[in-house]
Structure formats: structure tokens, C-alpha cells
Length: 123
Image (cartoon, rainbow, N blue to C red):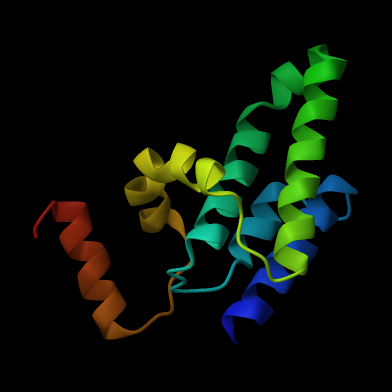
């Protein structure tokens, strides 16, 4: 899958979550495997925040609407194959190592070794 196809695919996943056709868990399990695209990694993290904020979303309509608009903007940019704004990508960079660990990986031996080394904190 090309980088453009990956972005378009992730945009469709986000829209599926926003329209309640798919849970966040189902969506993140379908994210492109082994991606290095910071735009997709950022989208992944934004979806994880969406899931983590479930209680606040239920209590605060304004927060819910703002978060929905934010994810919709991410989906629109990715669907168009565009880069996310640098400030959005930068705001999630501190989380990239933990997100990289949880993003879907192909089941190759090389990725198994990488995952094991990260788990054991070996560089």
C-alpha cells in the first residue's frame, strides 16, 4: 500500500469511528502495519485520546464537538493525501515511542525481534 493509500484508508477508519460504524479498537487494529508515516502515527494517537476521553465526552457536549471536529479535520487532510499541520504532529511526538510499540506490526521475525528488544529496553 502506498503512503497515499494508507492515508486514505486511515481517513476512512476515522470517519467510521466518528459515525459509530466501528469502534476505536476495531479501527486501530486495522491501521497500516509497520507504518513510519508520522501523519498516520499522529492519527492513531488522536484516536487513542478519543477513546480515553469517553467519560469527558459524555459529560461535556462542547468538548465532544471540538474533538469530533478535530478528528474530522485529520480525516479530511489524510483523505486528500495531505500532511497534517506540523504543530499537530509535534504535539504528539513525545508519545511516538509508546504508540510505535502498540501500532500494528507485520508478523515477520525481524519485527518480533524489534518488539522484544523494545520490551526488554535493549538498543
